[in-house]
Length: 139
Image (cartoon, rainbow, N blue to C red; front, side, top):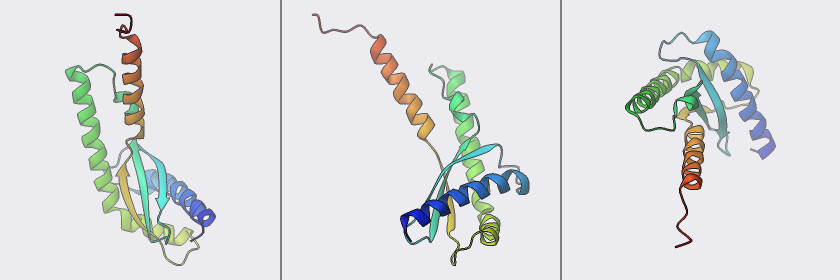
């Protein structure tokens, strides 16, 4: 599959999932989520969709208190349950994509947690911590 065609397919998959999941899926495990990106294999047989909870990056708090750790753990569990719910509905979603897409073979959909916001926030906090520590170069 050509790269331009694959990029268009990825964009259409993201757009359709963003429309269908909140309206059509009634699974209680699937809460307010955001589809951050989609990658389709070069042969077009599989699509990997990255998912994050809406507002989950706000729970990545800078302090290491017990409350923040519990909130992060709860958010992680909720995201894993949401991914399980999406995986169980992947057949329905694939069937919907088949009615929308004009490709011969509809890709198999796999959902994964997007750790991008978490990693970015962690690096930012580490850099902030380094910049506030007193330097020991003058000794």
